[in-house]
Image (cartoon, rainbow, N blue to C red):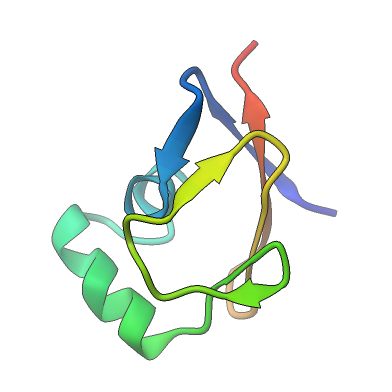
Length: 73
């Protein structure tokens, strides 16, 4: 089961998403994290911290789990 991460905007950059989901502590850690860990967006490997995530996108990080982007309620 995926952890639901709520956003109130149309999209969220992957770097901000990683901070919001508490995978990384700061924005400065995002680039290093993406170089060291495998991150998949909708089943495809992703290494760009600026990748836009939209509602319904699924982010899988094998060491951390699955996350789904949902609308803030």
